[in-house]
Amino acid sequence: MSATVATGRARGCAGPASGPAAGGPVGRQGSRPYTPGLVSQRRFGCLFEIVETLVLTFVIFLVIQNFVVQPYRVQQQSMEHTLEPDQYVLVDKLTKNFDDYKRGDIVVFNPPGAWAQGDGTPFIKRVIAVADDTVEIQDGGVFVNGVRLDEPYVYEGQETLVTGSQATWLVPDDQLFVMGDHRNNSADSRVFGPIDKGQVSGRAWLRYWPFSTFGILPTPTHPELASAAP
Image (tube, rainbow, N blue to C red; front, side, top):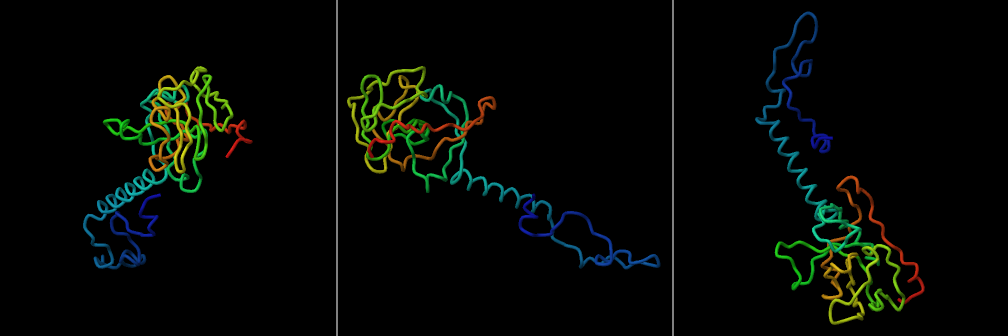
């Protein structure tokens, strides 16, 4: 549907119409002369409508990309094999306003300053823990509130090791503890700590390219944490 129809306008780019209203033939016995005053005289009418449609399309695109959903190309290896480099995902930027992040969500965010990329490339990781959770890495696994996580998404069954100077964290309010699925190839909260929710663009929810990998990205529910605090 064109923008012309959407705005309820009836402008057209065709030549003069015939018929009684346009001064065209009215019968077999004669016709009325052409009446210029009944035909739109606006110059460049077609060009104006094309430009108008393009501008409207561009505005809609900007609104969708900034506030609803945005495509993102995976450029890191830290989420293998859940996400591979050069795959494309759609990032949901809308539902974060009324549906808080959960353990298991895959999020795109701007890393802390010391870890920022020169070209501004954001990071993509998995949420491991949320506010008030206690995270501990020990025995090659991740414990949240004292319960070891079941993590089938981790790259080839890798152990999770401490990569910084800390092995236990209490996640503050409005922050998230994130890690990559490829634990041995990921700079994440183990080294830079929990991240502010304000730095998160949104959830990656759909992998759409290459088309052979098309599908919704599942979010693990972690039933083992159902009875754990908080």
